[in-house]
Length: 102
Image 1 (cartoon, rainbow, N blue to C red):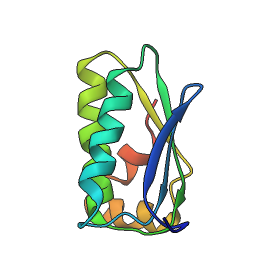
Image 2: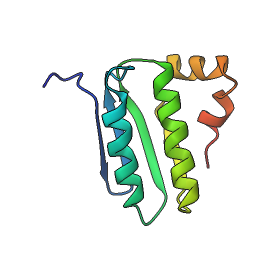
Image 3: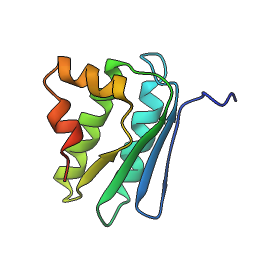
Image 4: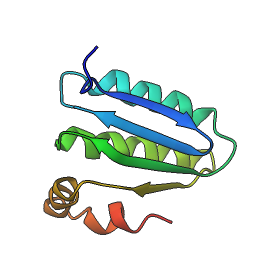
């Protein structure tokens, strides 16, 4: 497994997302994130600083996670979003959403 292989893990209230995520490998990352969010009993920080790629599927994954968390009463706060991901979010009118999560 290379250093850029995508992964998501939860430790002490922080859900860390790292690696190179694209359309070919997003589903296992999304599924694992959903599993970790489902097991959360408190709000989570989603640390995006380990991402090495910027792709629209990442925004889609984060939106899915947000909907799931909201349904179970868990708040997600996104931190460390790479500037290119914020720029991509702006193209979809999601920059404010990504940067202003509670």
